Image (tube, rainbow, N blue to C red):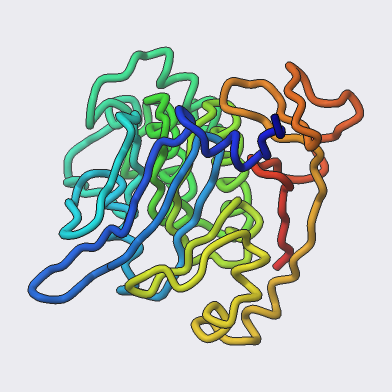
Length: 287
C-alpha cells in the first residue's frame, strides 16, 4: 500500500474542520461571492486576500455560520470555532476590564484565560480597562480570548489592524505558536501582503470568486495576483524557502517526508531558524 503524503494526512478525516463546496451568497440580486471551494484542516493557516468588496468577510461569515449560502454547501464538521473580529462592537463609554472582556461572549475558566493572556504576553494587563490599551495590546488581548476557547478553528479578521510593523511580525508569530500548541486550523483575512505571505501555508485570492489559490509562492507568480496588485508589488515580495523534512500533526506526532510517523522530530532540526508551518515545507517571504 502506498504511503500517504503530508497533504493527504492533514486533509483526511477527522482533521478537516471546515469545508466549503461551490458556496455562494446572493444579496439584493447580486452575488457577493460565488463558487467558493475551500477545505481547511487542523494545523493549517489559510489566508484570504483581495481588494475591498472581494468577498473576504462574506467568506469568513460563511465559515462562522453568520451567513448561510444561497448555493453550494458549508460543513463546519461540528468544530469549535473562535472569532477575532476586525472591529469590536462595544460601548466604549462603559468600563470594561481585560478580565471581564475575556468572558464577554461566553464563559471561560480563569486558568484558561490566564494561560492565554500569558501566551500572548499581556497577562499583566488583566485588571486594566480595555479603553486604555494600545492598538497592539488590544489585538493581543483579542487573540488571547480566541485562544482561551481552545478552538478547532480560529477565524481572524485583520488580526494586525492598528499595529506597527514590528508588532505585526510578533502577532503573526503568536498566531503560528497558537496553531502549533492547539493543533487548530486558522483562517485569516489580511491586507499585510509582505508579512502575511511569510505567515501562511495557503492563500486564496478572492474577487467575488476564487481567482487563484495555493502556496504563497504559486499565488504570487499567478497572473491574476499580478493583475490585482501590480507587477511591482508582486516582484517586491522576495520568496525564499526554508526546507522542512517533517510536519507536526494535530495529535503532536511528527510526519516525515518519507511517510513515517514518529513521536519526535529529528534532534538536529532547529525550529528557531524560521516560522514553522504545517505543510510539506515551511515557506518564508521577505518583504
